[in-house]
Length: 64
Image (cartoon, rainbow, N blue to C red; front, side, top):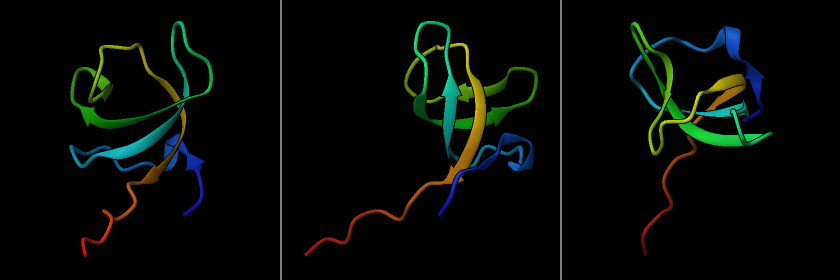
C-alpha cells in the first residue's frame, strides 16, 4: 500500500487512513471517514482535518 492523493479517495463511510495537517498537529496519521455535510471526519477526536493523502486500512493481525 502506498499513500495516494486525497482527491482520489472514495467519499464513503468506510474508514481509511488519512495523512495531513491538523490545526495544532503537523504531519498526523488518523482513521477517518467521509460524512456528507461535514467532510472528512476523524474517528477518535474532533480535530479539524486537512488530509492530503490516504490509503486503505491494513488487514487486522492474525490471531494464533
